Image (cartoon, rainbow over all chains, first blue to last red; front, side, top):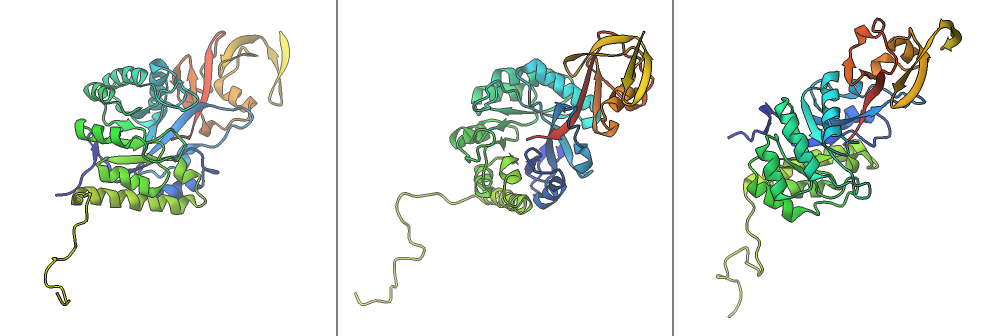
Length: 257
Length: 81
């Protein structure tokens, strides 16, 4: 049976989502997307700096990718909802990653405000993917409100610290009947593979790729790790044991007794 | 009536107050969105324009009349995670 990955009724061709922040130049982004074989890409919305108007990000994104604006900068539900509506009206489609952060030290998401934004944006027809702290009660409420997936953090944004929330993410995977996409904090392909081996539906990676010495090669590595981790999950890993168990029978040894 | 520059163009007319990207500004009372972008050397292809929280599509940028106390947001998509 084919291993389909569906979000909001749409089949997604890659379980590696790519964030487009922190790249030294936009030219790298299409190459990274191709190397990673990514299908979903996140972007952000900001006021123009009149001293440095910048380029059009959309020109650098391949036509076949799904562009998912995030609501970064939002400090509460109302600000997130406003950003989502603006991005949609500007032609970004109806996918949105809700990101509500009012903690500047750890950039941890506010689950309460995120839930409020989920409830309203789902009713307005958005495909809503909330970035959240891995809390089972909050995830259940977001799922009940119609979120298309749940995106718990692995570690704080930009830290490259890996799957620090492993135990809680594992609980969400077990209990929430939606794709669980680990977002933020994954620093190495092995950590992305770890999340996939647990049963995550996908991962979202930005800093680890954008700040690598060779972002294109790192994107390829992440793509392969995500695919490998998914295969490992589907293959059903054997149990781990406390004591050793020999690989061959303990009989017929070539030795004098 | 005042004389003022819009880019390198010398204009004569009244002024009006409105907000651009959250900051209070004074611009010519017959200014258009297109003119406002040109005065700031902002290529139209790179931006999204909001007028009083409503997205204004490009074909209206010349013709739409800005009014005193309007709030204009000039935003763009950038990299983000």
